[in-house]
Image (tube, helix red, strand yellow):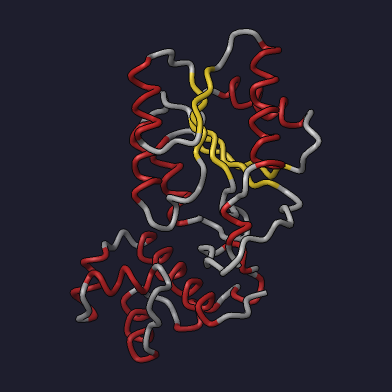
Length: 239
């Protein structure tokens, strides 16, 4: 359950962004119609600033919803669906499950990874996207907060449509709300240029999709073991 005021502000910001995008309104459209700077509208959507009641009422008219819309479902959302807030000390109590986001356009490769993960001893909550554009949309907008929790780890293929993996990695690492999420590239590319580019782009790892199924199986399991048992996840430093 939501308990902190900033979480209410984030939820309202999420609802604002959701409805704005449904109507194909830009930030500038809202900014000009309510008489508030574009940067301020961004802060409202990110939950960094509280929307005054009068302004919220005005925005509801523009978005063709009632003011109640911004609070619908708030009682059912747990705080771990929001941007994590840094706390003073790291918790060494490991999460009971791992939220994994797979960005992969090849259905057979995705199925193979899922099947491998099903053999592991970990409780892994898997979500997926099949192109770069959809992946970024899901990460930024979180579509349905109750259905798509914030990833603890991302598996990213480089050769995906619409927006390739290099672009997706760059956008994740330049977004202050996403940049702390570890991204492990899992790809068919044996290009040294691709490998160096991803590490320079702050990828947490680069794994080649071996044609030897047993080797690939071990690589995936070892990767999950590291992030589930060894590495300190961002979630463990937030509250």
